[in-house]
Image 1 (cartoon, rainbow, N blue to C red):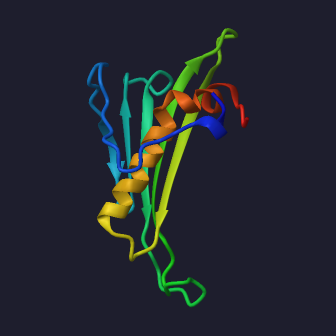
Image 2 (image 1 turned 45 degrees about the vertical axis):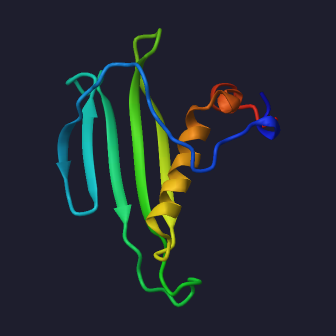
Length: 132
């Protein structure tokens, strides 16, 4: 399906079904970041998740007088190549919002993003790089 013909549910209920629960194990954290792994213990075979934040700061150039709060998540998954090498595929999600954004407005944005990541209407974009 083309992007122009896609549809999403504003404030729809998002759920994940099926699959197997996989625990994350911490690799360490600071005040602004947390690194974890899952699906294996060896560096070359485990998947990793990196979580980080950037807190809003006073800025005279920002519309609200503050920069946007940012929450960033990066998922890295190893892929063993036919030539014996390993590469890491990755997904990076960056959520930026104004300090005046309500929890409900944040939930709406996250719901929209979850649908666009998983809805079959957008499969051609994610799987085939189609911008049609």
